[in-house]
Image (cartoon, rainbow, N blue to C red; front, side, top):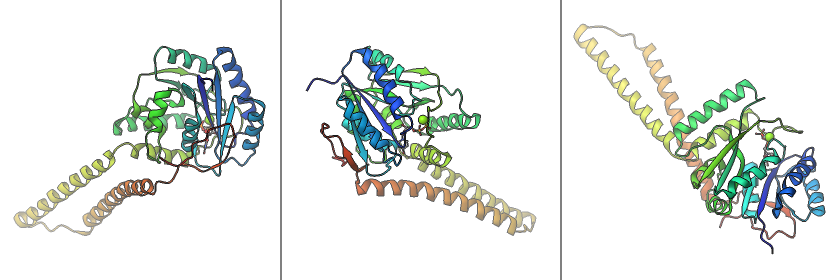
Length: 318
Ligand code: UDP
Ligand code: MG
């Protein structure tokens, strides 16, 4: 088996409208490099015939391999399957919708040759809605504040990883995966360069507001237990102020004979504390849920089919 220099991992969910154009663009970008490359497509349970397109592409091009999931398991699972499939000395992860320009891959390879284990292409936010862009900026500020790992604004999943970096990511056993954090957690020499944001070529984004919110919560909670600490601090602080307030009322009543009408303060205190308690319970519940989820040790995905030439690793955690 000749050594594959580069594997390109592409998660695809309902991308039948762009997948052919993507494949052509990627092949055009990679062929002049003269490197021996392979493309690992992962169909994440698409329902629009993406799997059929991938099968056809794989049949006509020996460097293409694919895996198809039994249902939609999410992009994180697809990336994981693609990395497990990959055999290259370097692995590039990129989207299928041409928002990650294939012409940047040779540049990433170049930087990798200069000794970097991770090369990150950071998109700027041109053409993005003002609200979305402001929200994501705020989110990344929050993440930087709360997490032990560093995530640059605009650093998505478009990146190159060396073989040892990929092996490091694959050695992390958690099934609740937040790749951006994992990539940062493994360390190694990392370099990043910006590129101009482009709109997706066809089809539509799978990340609505709700999905982004869930992803955001995942990101905040999957790296440390600092939100729990925050809950404790808030609780303690509230308790002390309540105590102070109670003492003040008692002192007022005893020393000055002031009669405080009680129900307004009571209701405020009950509602306020109830809110804090609910939020805290929610935070704890999230962690417990995660423990439950990890304890089941379910694989991140189930494979429906994969092309025969691929020595396939199962989705099961080892
Ligand atoms: N994707 C996936 N599974 C999903 C959602 C998305 O494999 O459940 C893939 C999708 O096909 C694309 C990439 O992840 O290649 C990024 O998705 P999308 O373009 O919808 O996200 P956006 O660019 O809007 O953040
Ligand atoms: Mg996209």
